[in-house]
Length: 176
Image (cartoon, rainbow, N blue to C red):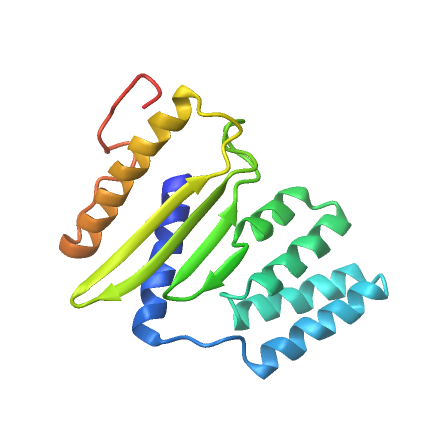
């Protein structure tokens, strides 16, 4: 599940470069504000509906996703809250995305995955970091190599239309 999410995030960033996206529209901000007012009044179902519409209008807004996640959490809809929170901590379409890992392997929880994109001549430069590990365990080194394999697969997908996502990627250990 992680690989498709990462591909989606990177593709969103690349689309942002092509479109030159800006911040949320005034309508999306108003929608978000209506949701916040309803949330403060304890009208959770109505707040969720407003935040969902705001997310549809401003899918790149980390604030809107966070508000939707909080409303889901207040309703006890934990899985949906996690999905909304997982979207991003920071997003500058076409340039930067940062998220915190909140579920998955124990060693990953609390780490941050950070993507920076830049256009240099005819190239898109991807600077990637997976940081915040509690300690440099063997699994961290394994993941570092697997991220490189994933990035090469993603490069191939963008350039040729064919990648090698899991489970068809290069196997490097008994972990995969």
